[in-house]
Image 1 (cartoon, one colour):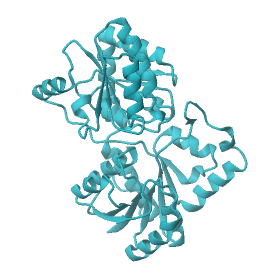
Image 2 (image 1 turned 180 degrees about the vertical axis):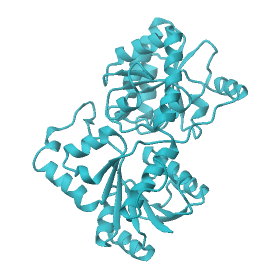
Image 3 (image 1 turned 90 degrees about the vertical axis):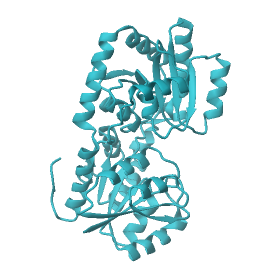
Image 4 (image 1 turned 60 degrees about the horizontal axis):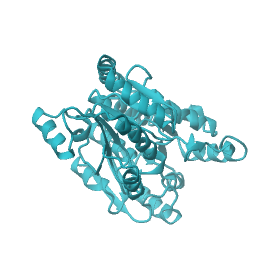
Length: 380
């Protein structure tokens, strides 16, 4: 039995947490003994425990990549637990402590720094000395780095990380459950959706980087057109009050804020399309959730989105911030049922080809096996 210790600093359930939950639900329990270290009170705690995975709560790491006060605590924990491999998720402290404890380290890079706010990446991040510093830290503290999309891998190379140490493994999910006709009817009633409505869902944290403000502008253009389209925003975040105020000021009657929804199929399976308006993405898990149900996407051309949404195949890509292009794409798909049906069919097919939980899990397990000198086990 090979012991793996995952370290995640998230207190909420974001993309990294969802990805970890998918892996924990699918790994080979006969071959690996896996525990998870996380902040006290994290929303991930009951979800992980429900999978019958041992958890260890510690203070001082909540939502922090670098927490100097936690390094000694983590180092002592590693010595006590004595795992074969430390697997860190956006926690520099975890990697520093692992180096001090002389442990093998796998690090998953869940983000792409290709945009900051609404502008391009600062050029200094690809130049001396930042590139050498960032690359040196990654190369020194990690034995293997998992990039969760081709865009993330390119980004790592651009900032000095060794290609030899980096492997690309797409994010993945378990396919969402289809709703029964009765459940769909109940969901439409719950959110005030009429049978004639063309439903556009956006499942994302209510933060500036996700681009909700541009979707609201597209919603205003759609409303002026007088067509029955509804926009459903699923999620919470620091921009919630501002976005609701903006929607009110724009006089939008076609926008619904649901707050947190645990089972997103309740929204996605009554939706026609999914929108992603982000400035920065790796492999967005919400997009994959939609694809698993055959929901095409209209998404920005940022980061890893083009590797999930093939323009003109299973959805449409538009330039970041171009809400007029988003509006046109929505209207076009609503008015062209044959094109919509083709996108929906290919969405499901592409999900099955690339993004299933089993494919991702086997590849992560093989990263562990290679570090431990075991070699590949099972099919990729």
